[in-house]
Image 1 (cartoon, rainbow, N blue to C red):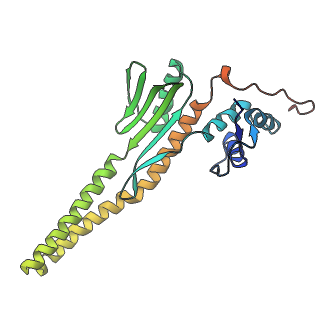
Image 2: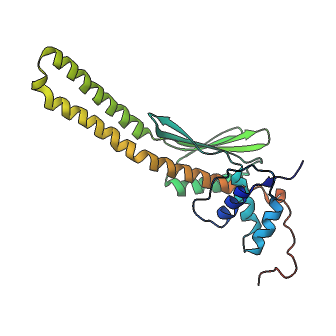
Length: 237
């Protein structure tokens, strides 16, 4: 099969990710007409980037984007799947669990059944699943508190609306206007409070999932493309 070639936008994203620069641009042009991984590694060596860092960054280009589970247009949940295309070793899984505990600041619970492994903490789950060509890592989480708060808030607003209509029909609206207004306002404040925090929470979780997945997307050393030999006169001193 022809060796994978990366487009100009993908090349820019790879080098920015390998150099740990913030906010790498999203690849937008057509892949397949640019440079191979070996050529990118050769260029990276000249500017002081390790071949392994280039390979890891190149893996992230092919990773599907993070998906959000929305409710009323708000990101209540985040999911991300990384196809590793290799078997993850027991030691690698153990190191991943340590990283998960550090990143999410939670001990979590470990569960295993056959080839499936899971680390979970409340609504946050990380599953290691067997596929036809190796393992895949699946992250998923839901902001349970926000979902419950928004649901309660909507309920308060609905009750306020029903009371308004029923009181108006009974001719007693003037007597309960304050109570209805307080009830409706409480519901709106509850909804707004959760809605304001959700986008930032979803972005943070997405960034954490992508970063953790990218660390494991790097192929095992034996499967990495051979590193091109350094050209005479280009060796770093």
